[in-house]
Image (cartoon, rainbow, N blue to C red; front, side):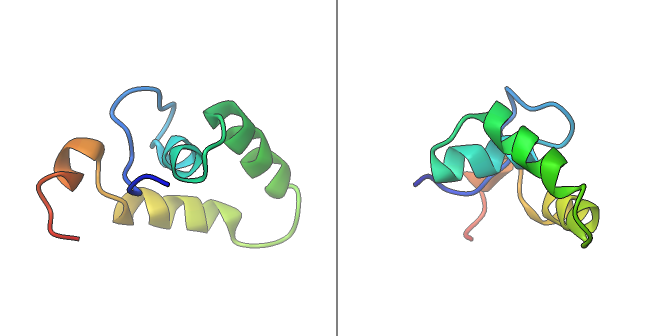
Length: 67
């Protein structure tokens, strides 16, 4: 497992799905499809995506932060 940070390359919107895919060792496309399918279910998936977009550092910034 790698450090959880939004990559600067290979991302479509915010890089959240690409970061989660790298973290769990799956492809970014698979993670995006899982996210889109989960949006069909009731729950706060979109709000979680936005929160992760705000909270996860970008890959370049993650190397400079302590956490």
